[in-house]
Every structure is written in structure tokens, then in C-alpha cells.
Amino acid sequence: MVLPSFIHFNQSGATEFVFRMFTSSPRMQAFLFLLFFLLYVIILCGNTAIIWVVCTHTFLHTPMYFFLSNLSFLEICYTTTVVPLMLSNIFGAQKPIPLAVCATQMFFFVTLGSTDCFLLAVMAYDRYVAICHPLHYTLIMTQKLCTQMVAGSLGLALFLSLQLTALIFTLPFCGHHREINHFLCDVPPVLRLACADTQVHQAVLYVVGILVLTVPFLLICISYVFITTTILRIRSAEGRQRAFSTCSSHLTVVLLQYGCCSLVYLRPRSSTSEDEDRQIALVYTFVTPLLNPLIYTLRNKDVKGALKKSMSSKAASETP
Image (cartoon, rainbow, N blue to C red; front, side):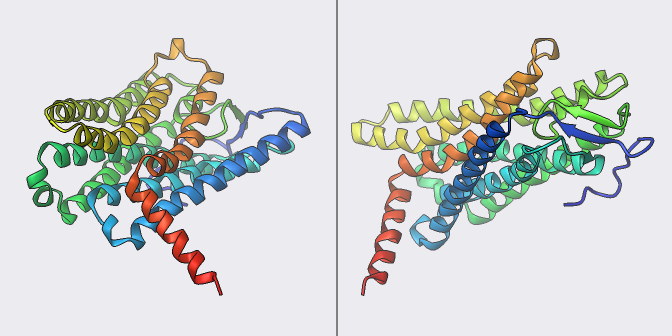
């Protein structure tokens, strides 16, 4: 992964960062390594299973599952940006991280996290069209529009992430080794290490946070107001239950993702604790990507049916 070449670092000497250790106990280090590694493997397997099921079953080739498979791919990339470097720094002494590596991780982390938030808003719009305008659904949610929405989400995220990362890494960082009280090069803890006035940078961070978190969340809320109003008009109890079930999985993921991220990026700096930020970051680094495949498979009859069909056909093919 290489950061775009037109980002220039305003640094004197080879500045390096180190992550603050979780613990100095070798036993706890081994336990945390195994725990995080196991969670990472489960995240990879769960989200890969969703992508595979959607790609191999034609009845799942719909906008809803197209967005879901893209969300799963994002979760794989998102955790892969963070976890391998995190695991390599759990054991032994603190390992130096070059400035360019830190900037690259921040760039991809912010890009993928922002795309995730935009895509959740796109999925809310998809549910709005499906429930509020079912007769026009296939005319509105065409394959071309779905692809453009995903590409637009990624493009906007790339633009915002590039501007934010470039702005932060033009700051001077005092000293040779700087300790980040985190397990990744996230924006708030890196900003705390700058030995210059960061008021402008904090303001830009809030603006980006509003664009990435507040605006999409408001659009999701508006979509669900219309969705709820439409569902309550459905006379059949079974129809209402089915409509709510298709939205509940998405809404659960939305509340987890936006709730945790808002606590880190939109709280006033005076009311935040670096240790709290690190604990909250564990939730959206491990818990949300882990729950996504579980929520969407356990609460979705189509995906569960496709998984069962795949497993039963595989078992039948292996039987002599």
C-alpha cells in the first residue's frame, strides 16, 4: 500500500511512531494475540461466506444483496488494514512504525470506514425504495445505479480521506519516537502528538465527521421514517413482520457503527479520554465486522436458505 506521492511530509529527520502496549505481561500478550487473531479469522470467514453465497446463488443477485456483499468486502479490507499490524505489535518491546506507514494506514482506514458509512446510507435508500415504492423498485434500482452508488461512496470517501490525511501529516511531530495511545494510526491520537496548533485540523476533522457520520445518519433516519409509516399501513400482520425483518438487520448494524464512531470523532476533545477511544475503537474494529455476517445470516431467511442449500449439496457430493 503506497500513499499518493503528492502528499509531502513536513518533518525533520526520520520521525517514527510506536503504539502503546496493551500489557507488559507475556501471558496476557499471548492471550490477546490469540483472541484478536481468532476474531480476525472469524471476520474473514464470515464475510467471505456472505460474498461467496451472494455470488453463487442467482436468486440473491438483487440490489439488497449486491450492497451486502460489497459491505462484507469492505469489512474484510477494513480489518485487514488494522489487525495484522496490531498483532505484530502485541508481543515484546514497542516496535517503531515509520511515518509513511502510519500515514498509509490512516489513509486506508479512514477511506474504508467512510465508505462503510456511506454504503449503509445507500442500503437504507434501497430499503426505502423496496418498501415504499415496490412497483417501481426494479425500474429505480437498476444494476447501473447500484454500481454508481457504490463507486460514488468510495470516490467521496477517497477524496475526504486524502484531504484529511495530507493535512494531518504536514504537521510537525516533536522527537524521534512518538507513542500513540492506540493500536492503530487513527486521526485523534495522532493529532494529540503534534507539537503545533491543531485548531484548524480539529475543525476539519469535525467537518469530515459530520459529512461521514451525521449527514448519512440523518438520511438513514429520514428513510426509516417513511419506511415505518408505510409498514404500519400494511394490513397483514405477516406482511408487516416480513417488512420489519428485512430492515431490522440493517438498522442494528447502523446503530452499532454510527454510535461507536460518533463517540470517537464527534465528541468534544475536552470530554474524551484516550483510553476510552481505544476501547471504543475495539468495538468498530472487531465487534461490528464480526456481527455483520451473523446479523445478516441469522436474521435473513434467504441467506440462511442459501447457506443450508450449499452445505447440503456439498455434503451430498462428498457422500460415496
